[in-house]
Figure 1 (cartoon, rainbow, N blue to C red):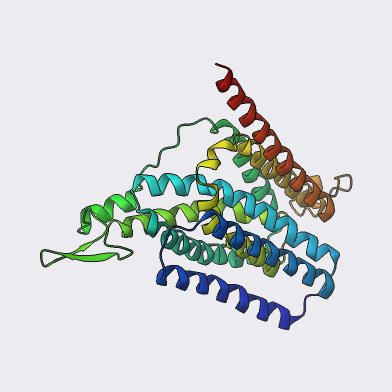
Figure 2: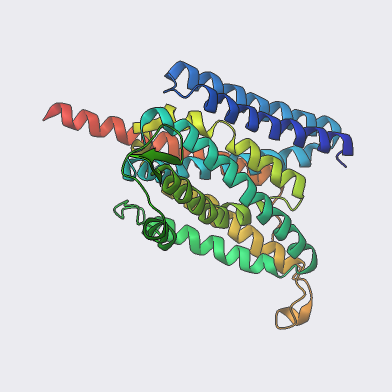
Length: 327
């Protein structure tokens, strides 16, 4: 049982860190150096590990393991999301100096959206256990889709909402720093920044549809789910600038993410079978023979898949470079 004081205190500190990060970006927009990005990413990763250690001491080993498994899963999915962020930034030609603010606002939007999904998902799962079947099937479908679409040409398609804003609002062609409104020749216009914020926000909504079912497959504790989600979003801004052009070198990342999503999807379906209440399945009784996946096993599978994926991507990149050098 996690102490109430720790839950309240942790949530306050985590939200405060994100808001402070946003305030710093707003006050001093700049292109962060690699050293600065590495320092911040290392800080946030260390913070997550300290948090896991606190859970181990204050609660138990299983709770700490569930947080780590959820955090690693959400973090890996967030890295994949950076591909889309890169495409959106390129599509709208966001100035480099303003990209930090865009990413930070996107993170805040993502936090609000995922918080709503977590509360709704927790309430639904508490009343309707059979929803695990739907989550599991959806994750397996997503895993298959990730593999099938891995070679699809990445191109951002403007949503109908953005098209509506273009038509209904007066959107100027040029940016005015981080502002969403500007004055040109005495007339008020929206800047393209409003379109970027909408694009990032709607994309975050789609991301939440994948990530929230995935983490609920590892733990149903709303606090652990929310904490893992927040820690996965921390440092995402710096990670964006740190990886940059390296993202396209992670060629096997889609396979790794598909394997993780597929594993969690199967895990969810097995858990649903074990606690089954649907009458048309085993007469409404739980299935006794289904295997159980411990938190330790889940964490080992997730870390193992990511390690193999990263190593295979590095090896392929070096092989490809060697072939080019030999030509």
